[in-house]
Amino acid sequence: MTKTEALSLLECSVTELACKLSISTQAISQWPDEKIPLAREYQIRDLAEGKEPLTNKVEVL
Image (cartoon, rainbow, N blue to C red; front, top):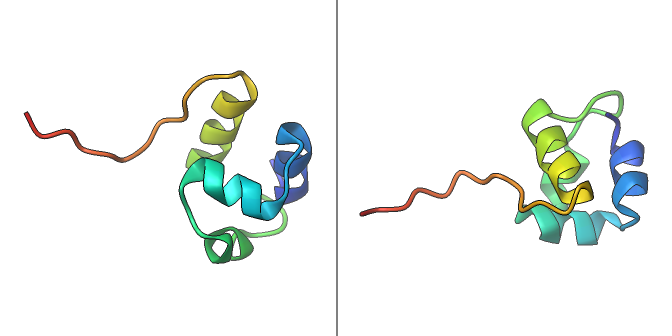
């Protein structure tokens, strides 16, 4: 998936996508044009399906 495809799939701007993924717009600007990182692609597909994206948050019990 490319950045353009991700933005189109979620019908959002770079700023909105960054907010949805809890990352900075600068992080998105560093993604390669031809293929975004696979973990981000999974998160974007989850968002498109209405699911909560997986995160790296660790819960201490």
